[in-house]
Length: 70
Image (cartoon, rainbow, N blue to C red):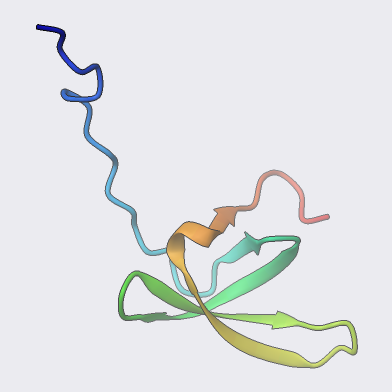
């Protein structure tokens, strides 16, 4: 009987990004404002008109910024 290669591996538990962290959400750079329920956070970003707005997104949708912002 063949053993499944995934059987011994465990997925790393996701961690909430720190508050005030700059992250990438899709093509936008956003700031994490607060932690919400269900592995979600509230982010703040700026639209094309320069208005600030807040959204609730899943942690998995956010990626860390690397060496540069733009």
